[in-house]
Image (cartoon, rainbow, N blue to C red; front, side, top):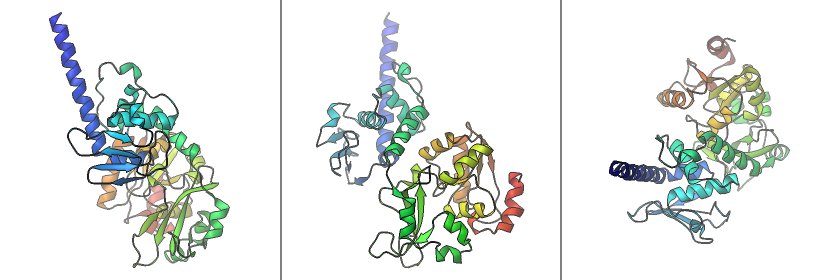
Length: 355
């Protein structure tokens, strides 16, 4: 009997240490966590502030999560509705509140821990007492993703086309075809005093290709910074570029081709390869991985740039996706696909794809 009691006490201490480690991990990645839920935030020396995602307020300083201070690190406070009173006051309570609010379901503490572990890519190791409450990260994350898409609003495709000069002269000078830029609605914003003024606008559409959910703007002059600019509120990590065009081709072929940038997508499209989506960079976010998971793809062709960043991206994507797909890596004769000609793609890329 004594042995059982000691074991139970030991297990309890072990569980507390694991939960503390999970909480500390979430604090260290707090900005990544907020970005995952598309929460705009401001960082201060000892805290991060933002509008409350639990009760849905719009006061940008309503919530603080404290990132320093031994006694308060990881604690959160909603100064308008005191939402921390409904959930635990630590960061896991905050996460439980956000998950419950976003999915519109009563997410349990065990589900929250599982979500946190998988978000941090750490081991769950069967914390005692929470096993029966576990759902997979994919199940819960899918619900979060679907609700975000459900509530997302955008500008109609017709309206955005009327606001910019299509096709973009800049990208025509880079060797892209006018019909390609017309297909992807790539044009110059000439309206003065706008965030995208004098930038080439690359719209990002919903899955039905009806509404623009965001855009990225590229400078055409070396005197303007930054080189790339996301539209306000647009989280590129929550979308795959060109999914609206590619989804039917992915489903038909059971293969998704993953590239870094928009130019890579356009050049492959000009070469007659249509099951292509872009990551807006060289990393695959969890939201993007979920989109791929729902696409019907069984094979994933990874075509990142041939530089060091691209090679590191290949290794990370392989670890993220090796259990889900048959993965193929394509060797590029140049740094990236977007700089290749159609003839070079026909000679070097298509044979590797078996086309």
